[in-house]
Length: 389
Image 1: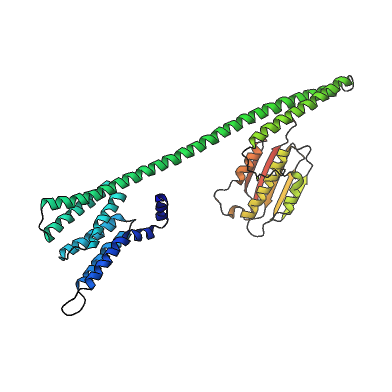
Image 2: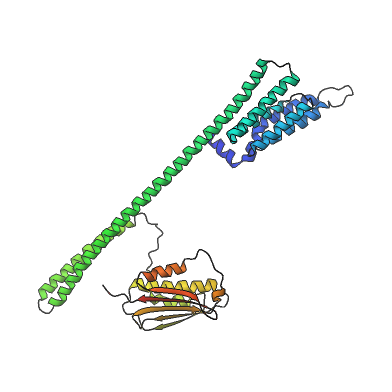
């Protein structure tokens, strides 16, 4: 329950500050009623109630400034000193000095807490000198009360720092534990990936060798060709089972909403260009002959990213041209637009060109991008034709 009260106090700091002052304010209010009911010779209200209410309000209001303890203590101390200079008697609201002293000891540094203690001790001395016949015992009693409250504030501050340190260490330990778990998972996934590579490479190599042997023996020794085909089938099933097992391990912590839709290729390029928000003309020379799916995806993403950049930076009414050439030893992808070109504003945080370079770099190609003379922008990528393994 105490923790719930603390959590509520942190959420409603201003209301909590008012509630902390409420008991002392209620005491001052009851005492003011006694002043107001006093009989005076002329039958009016005792004038003492006016200064009583004024001093009480001036002492209680700063206690609500919980987030500014030094200012609160300074105002309370100055009001109490002014009360002493005016030779006004002590009132219940003067307890605010002790409350403000506790706030400084709890929230401020050691130097400020010590300064507040010395001011409070001076207040005890002035009280005894002006309003009572001071004795050493009376001063010691007042000082013990003040120092006790001051030490209580220091202890509360020390305990708060200790608890904050425990929470910080617990959070750091939790972060380190999560990080170690992620590192261990990444290391395990890397090991599985290497194992997957070894399994696939070995079995595919066996299948290739057996297929070559079957092709050679097909005309001369049909039985040997049949055995080779059987070996290919058995090896393929083993490789497929191993791949499923290892990929299943990799997907254990995968998001259940993961999309397994096949990645787009060149057969979807025309549809993407046609549905693009930028009016685009597509021209293709030659035809891809057994172009790997990875390269098809790279060409698709390069065109997609280039059209996205044209839409973002080309300005209103921009148009684009997409040219893809399969006739040479390399696949050439050229995307140009008639937008603002060099006049387009630079945007921070973009990764489009970096992504293009990474995709093209996987196949030993290169990509360049920049404004054209007279306006517009060009993206030119070259991907060497991947050879079948």
